[in-house]
Length: 581
Ligand code: ARG
Image (cartoon, rainbow, N blue to C red):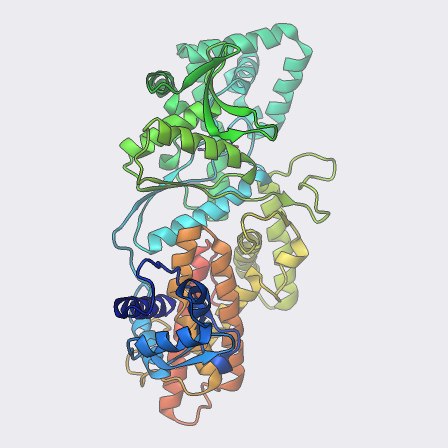
């Protein structure tokens, strides 16, 4: 609807330009918003106010001219000018009903499919394999997965890339320890965290061990077979841990999506050579760097991107440059999204700029860092265990499920144990994921079990419960939500019906927005609002006790589309719905 109104306004602008009443060189940025007060319309645009000054007209006069030049469309029942020059649009509810009816018959629920289809790399999760996954990896994993699913639902070709940290100096320490303790005692690796700590302790205490660790790194980088075998074994175990977390979380990452830092090792020398040939390299204290004018520190001193250390070693940035080139040439990506901590913002700005300067990526390949803030504890400080350690993701999920189980049992004591387990799992995991997804990714957020498990407010349990209410309507009717054949058509009469219908029709624009901005919280917000409007509708518009069979059928259709939209929306967020809870 908003994009339709934008198109209509654009064509009004064009015709005023043709008539000469608006300067031809204006290219307005047309914005259409939901109207705040429905009495004044469903949508509003401030276009006349934006253009008044450059056009040398009074906003209300320009608004009138735009309205006069606006092409008619069945979707719009009425257009009005309000306040200082807002143009307000009332949508036609009959037209809306037809759209909803079509959405109900469409497996994509009326969501516009991408054209052209893009090849989109989504770089997410990407933990360092030397340690076990901890809460710091939760955000990247969950947010990245939700966006990947939305892009796929829109028809794009998504290429998941798990850029794990599987290379680097800390592996020397781990391999030396693994060797010392014998590979067969690998059982210790069941607890990677403990293994890392033990290796670190040995490293700090024994200079002789530290020496061996350093030699291991050199051997590894030189391609020594024994070192590589140890390394491969270690990574195998560590990746197994990650995979267990993904499965537990219902995250769609698989082993085939892992392309870690080590995969780019052979390309790093070429990256540096090509930067040199492009005339971009400067030597500074033995290290090889790229200086770009646009990056300087607060004193105006240029900031380097170091690509090779004085000793010859390569860096995180070098690997990212190689990965960009790979994504361009091999994966043929049109767009690459990086779901990585906000604190790496400068790193990405720099490597993107270097890659473009060096011609590693084409001008039309979009590179976007989708940064996110820190997950804090309830006290607003970085999330830690009671004794100050990092919280293992697995432990966190265990606790979420236990708490969810207790809550659900309290609410519904008749549930048998198997059903209780199933519900607890969906609610517990759903709550953790939703709490993260529902906040704007760029802000920090506080992890709070009580809040995320509440059945009230913008939470997973609330939305999952809203879905079960719709499901139960259909169960009582012995009908399938998916099959509305034989029902009388959908019509929108009561206010609550129109409000629900208008919101349902915005599923499309919501998903397009998430795909563009990488912000699942907009989808959360949408679903929360949807559940609220459904509640109002359910209270005000009886379904089974409707005044006529036609009215009942229409309301059933609205309920069906609500249920399907809630379920699809939650599934895109990676949250399972239940038929009852
Ligand atoms: N392993 C890195 C970390 O834990 C994240 C990697 C993100 N992806 C990338 N292409 N740099 O900080």
